Image (cartoon, rainbow, N blue to C red; front, side, top):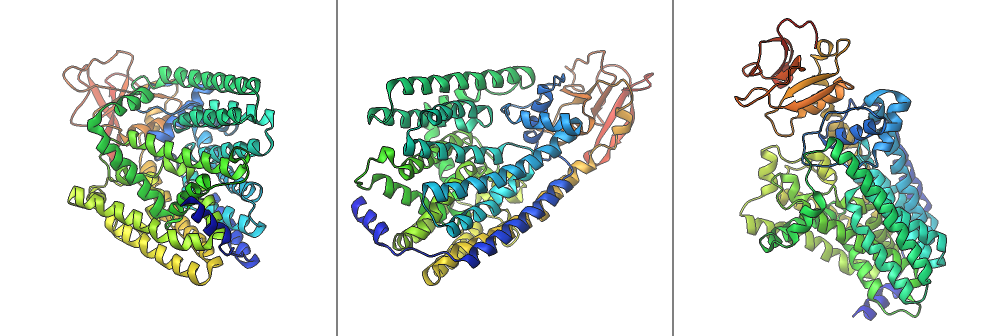
Length: 576
């Protein structure tokens, strides 16, 4: 079977890219880039709580600031804190760290496009115009450029995943000892940036072992490279543990918690569902391109070959991309098992790490395997349609639509569907139909004028990114801007710590105020229930008008009207 598929791919006509298409897409990428720079400048502050604030806070830890504990079960790896720390040191304060992070992410998005170009030319041997088209398409995608407008490491993670793939391919080509050691250091340190990179370590060891067994590298090189992986991982683990015990004292033991879920058979059905939902996101938001990529990779990896596959850069790159995608789908599925929000059903934030690499392989297929693509594209579209309707049959209702009506569809985690939500009423079925129609149009264009299909997809993505940034990204800052009317009263000279009465899980105002009042510590604790104990050192506490602090005499000195909160101060005190 794989022999026939390989013959189909090899014998199929090659699609020729045109200079005009490359120029159009470069112009579109530049336009989107300039627009996103203005967005980065106009953003009012972090709005994804506690995620963005957590990464900003990590930077303050690097600078030696004493910070209040973050009241969340989540943990945010410390690596990106280097970026926010540099921003704070250079531009001043936590707000400087935020602004610097956005421009750093913009540079990472450009870097993603650059590495895509290098992979396309050097590893997959695509013509220059095709490589330019591929780099432009990946750059203008919402998952790349819109996600870069948040102070989080997602864009940097996409870049590092591509660098990992590129280095593995280069080692396969040259068996350069230094490059192999560099991969060891890189893959060991990556978990300090993003927890999903932990499973890249066994994938890397698998490839190292393959090279050793096929006598491509010596035992000494294997041992040194492996030792570097462990040393680098120990450093990343130690850094993460240090910060976790310092400010994330209520966070879960994430890795062990996910592993334990594997041994609970009652959760396996839910794991299939969450993995299927992420797969739907990959297939639908790429108009079937990711499905083409997955089938193309499997066909090439298992097809007979006259050369050693362990020394073939394309094969090694595809193995890394395929296994990396599977690992993130798997760990993401474990993470989302108990998800209740609408976006948890079609979650895209985790798997977006591998999207640039997947799209690149899809582009390779579209230009190198015309006959193959014509056969498998409908299969890819049918797959995400099938996932959607399987959900409807099992659930008996459209849970995405139901969740949207209850305001539980979180935009940053499903950035790829945001622009479509402006055109159709959000729902699993409506999204599926809309993306299937887009896929059908692109398929017809590919059938008639193959070289224009990717150009059309890229232009659609560019329009979608601009729409999402303008209509969804910027307005999120309105909530942040509405917070902080109590700032002048709270930030009087000498204030170091203020209390915040807990009562709402993941309270948005708490994180908004922590950002606006920084470097004042805003400590989250129970201040109004009968069992509350309030330390005498607290002079001011944020709470509810109808629920004053339980101990002592307090007066209201300021209000946060947009959030129905007030600032209490002890009677007789002149400042917080």
